Image 1: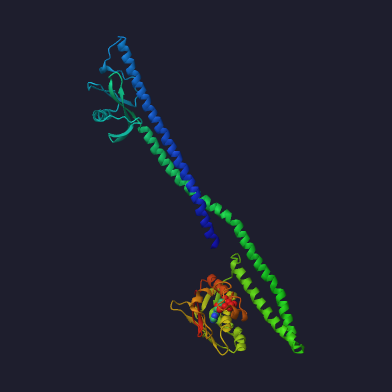
Image 2: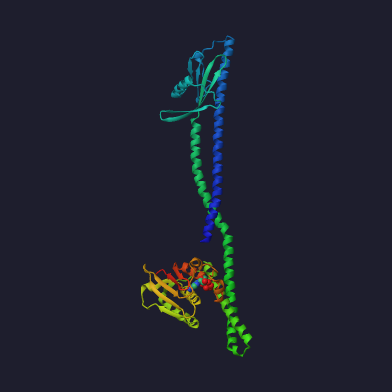
Length: 431
Ligand code: ADP
């Protein structure tokens, strides 16, 4: 229904906004964390560089004072932390590797050191797989002063990598959860936003229903008064007689209009449930034939009925008697309205190919132009405005018929040829 569609659109709108905000916040948080960790790693690498430089200077100083000889072979690596590693290549191409738990790393770093010189300040990421366990290192190189040679330093950043991986997983899961909550919230708030709209719509329907309802009584009073006056019409002067005639026509038109408005308002308010019964459609067509006969006679139209009364399961439909009668009445009324005197209107009952009870209302009237066929079921739509108005039509009949058809899950087919006549065929749902 209309409200459901609007609610869905609102949900998509609210949901997308919330979704974008959630994703942005999550991405921002993740990037911030990644940057902090990286900053921390670079800091550590820097510390390591400083420690090594200090150590070297200390040794150079001691040597200058003659306290001890710089012994490259026996460097004390106690200043290194357990996740730090150094490969030192002296100018005479001798290598020293700090003792560590990263054996394969030391070897790889050694291989490396012989080939490259890494000058990148921020270091470079280096991955190795040691006995199936992937480890990540941040590696950088530095030249020692006083012809000390070059050294490569690496720090183990596997734990940071693992932390980032876990956080990525957690963030992804929580984003999914948050997005589902956001969609649910969006749907909930869209529902809340619909409340005042629904209320004002209901008020408008209520107003139309009440107004047309209230108008009906005074109109019937005027109608019966005019009919009373009609009895003594002969005693009135000609001009007054004329006024009386048009008064009667207008009152009738008003009554029809108000009836139509009432029905439309009722079909708009789904709150008024319609009572469905088992209805014999052949019986209804007989009743309507009787009811409309005077109208046909008055206009000089031949009315025919082709609906044999046989108690047959397929003659029953599931529907509301008043509405079905109104539906048939609207179609018959139109057929007579739009058929010139001497023409013919036929009501036929049959069963469709797929065993649906079907009612046909055919006329030999003015017909409907092809391009208008799709529009005649719209509210207030009339093919020939002037003519239809003259005949008392407001363009509401078929729109009411369409509402009744929808509430009964019935179909209508219209075929028409201009100047030859029209055929309205309704297929009902069997009981
Ligand atoms: P109205 O009250 O004007 O008859 P309807 O909604 O019943 O309004 O019909 C819409 C329009 O469809 C009419 O104005 C008329 O032009 C056209 N129409 C409906 N039924 C017929 C018919 N049997 N023959 C020709 N035209 C028709």
